[in-house]
Image 1: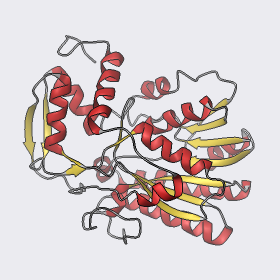
Image 2: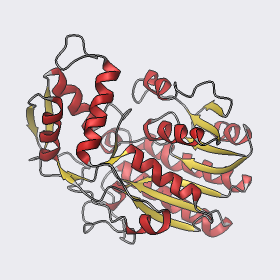
Image 3: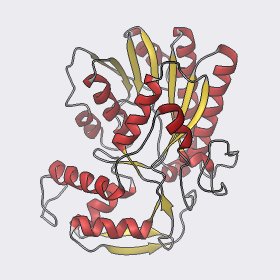
Image 4: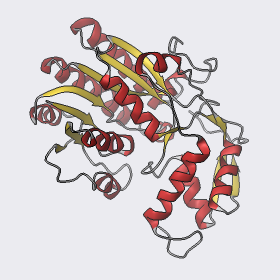
Length: 327
């Protein structure tokens, strides 16, 4: 029996696939290796496990019925981790219909094939963005989350509702894990920590939206993966639950930049810009539910996580700070 990981060549997905293979699981990956960022990066994400007999990779679009059916046909699937999505708040403002297609239709297809296959549990990767701009902190799972302020957030909330519908109608056990700004090695190049690190290391300006007072609950990827494993390993799957996976220690943007300057050993050149539409002022997870249901306890501090990320960045680019030709 296999675990299907959609989006398994992505940042979080590839770390999860490695963890599953390391403990002897049979894994099927469905990923279209699209060009949202350089597909070569996604190839590298799975390079360490490529060719493993326990791993089957299906190249296909999660919003295409044939691709989803092929993934389920590759091996008997007993559990699904649905990570495949168009990610990012800001890009979703430019092409909301693409986000709806992948994140809503894609989720519906995965849910329907899961129902047909009678899988034991489905873990859906949702987002802290569903809480919007008006939810009181720390964010609790029982908040209404009915006023998303970006197409990305709206599609993730819609997918959660589809998950609930499939549980209600067909008894499909679903855990919706709301992820809070995951970072670490292999992080997407468009995200803040990766982009800031690259530009500070090269001596290039970084663009800071607003006054730098916004805060994010940055969560190290190994802690996020531990949350997924906790959901997979429960003796009994949750019937239907929404569960935060955060670090529960938000850090302000200005403080984050100051930490990166210390770790990189170079001062940032900051260009200020106005507030970015779709961005929320703060994310802050209440993780009591994750602790209770999944045994989830994040271990990596923001400083330790940034130091690990920067070590990976330097090794990946094989260039010292400020070197000519750094990629």
